[in-house]
Image (cartoon, rainbow, N blue to C red; front, side, top):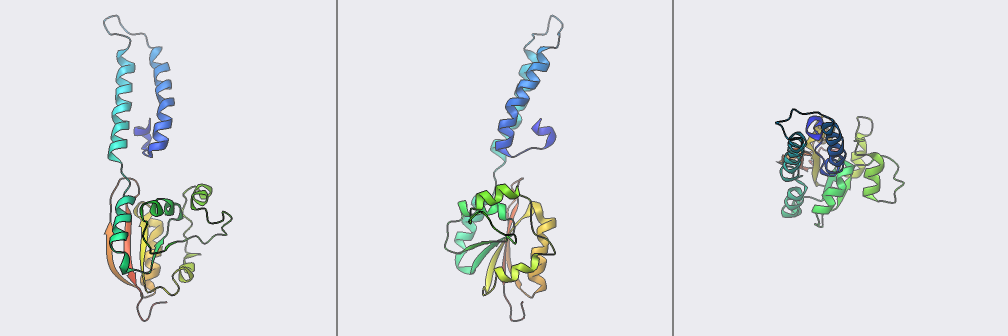
Length: 199
């Protein structure tokens, strides 16, 4: 059923598929077939479809965080900090990026997790907390920084674009852009440099 609902998160898809197999098998077992058709043909066909699609998801969906980590490591000397707007994806970013440039997540809420990024991501359930009302807290986050990498989740671009607009409206200069398409997250990395007039 994942291919109908466009569920493509592998861990969810894999666990849910077991239940889908059981439901499909129970339903198909009750179908009375004419004599010339073997009773196992429909369950085998449905199982084949599930397996074919699931293997396509497992093989075809490769989140690009590894590429982002390699890119940031290769360009590490170009920025003072890495700012990520989607706090939940800080977990993936910090797994693949092991360089020296500090990663600064945008998290304008009280943090009662003791800095546990995974627990914070689970509690907030991956929903974005970036809004027009709290965007000005970026000023504190980037205080004293001259150049920053801004990591944006392309899939959430409609929300996260206000972060890009915030930097541009305050006179930060866009120096470069790197993008990856991976069907799931589509991360983007923007290099901004503070200008003399930036706030």
